[in-house]
Image (cartoon, rainbow, N blue to C red; front, side):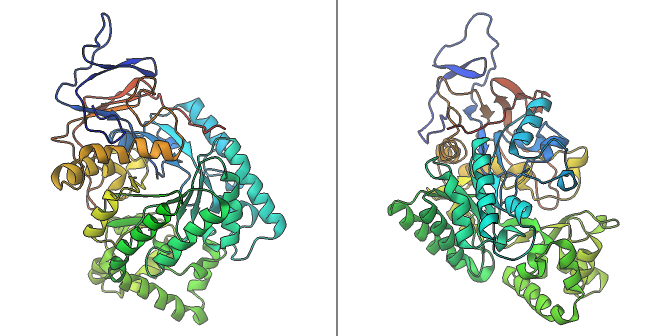
Length: 508
């Protein structure tokens, strides 16, 4: 048994009564009790995905197939500055008229049920979009006060932190003063300002310093989302950035980060284009692509971004909303351009226009050495940065990043067992007790008497991810049993259909 604290494992039985752990020790079986024989297997706290994008997906399929099968029992959503609400009116809501803020999202999940527990941050970009729109301009004093009030309201509704997405529209148009003001309602709660920082490549160090400055000025903890040094010419920066975070922690700053166990990231294809070209939203962006006075500058910026990644084959397209674009899914831009006999940039423009800029991509931008170093660092936690998918139905569409199916078993199998990157108990701590403490998820992330019975049973000798970039829709192996709030959701590796998950409102 691994208790989630980072301590070495012990041999013990675990007793569950209702939704809580009632006993730990030898010989706990009682007459009439249901017994699950896990001899020879490992039991650990259910995994907490501290950076998840399983928001709307639960409204499509509440079984959370690809996450619960990884052993994930709690998802932390509302990431990268984007949360389900607040929204102004039904015209801006893609899911349900009743979901107007985080409270409405929680109420919907409580009504319909979910296989996993859900906690949510409040998205700074969502709030900016509601109050200001998608324009690149400073907030007025009145607008800033309104945004701060919305953050405070979300915290009262149970949000577990504030997230920002500073490479995206409209969150990227916020300046330092705005970010500090939005983070200030977190002061005294212990909850973090979690940031997809402004730049993860050429300006990485400055972006890290900006995130730390928000925390210092607002008086709140800082959590860096999916820490990376992106692009071959920036790989050397990973070690200095880690030293910067270490020094900040030594100086008294509360600072942590998360990372997924892959060398490729996932985002929208428009992230290859400069932020200024996306000012005003999708319609304005598409108009700029046809503006003769801007085309040269846009092309230069895009080609520079691709050169930083290494080549056009570092860009793989994963999904597309436009009609007639199925042929691009799972294909790399360089190879596809050669196949059709077109310049890669011109092909990219055609695809972006046809898909109305709603194209997903993965970018192979990080080194394996840096990935291992970041995963093993004591300030770091494990995340997927992915969403719950399924091998059937609407969530089986496209060619998603394999992290949605394999992030947590990949750490347990590939990095802990095969590569000996860190002891198994340390890897488990990074996905259980550590995120629970960071987000004030009381009585979760531990195997302890009185804790909620979120538990995962796996075989340390066989646990492994199977999803790949070319064949991502594959569930992992070696995870036998998963309990959420005391109910069995995975038994013998298969979903039972149970939906015992809860919404986790962080109260003060």
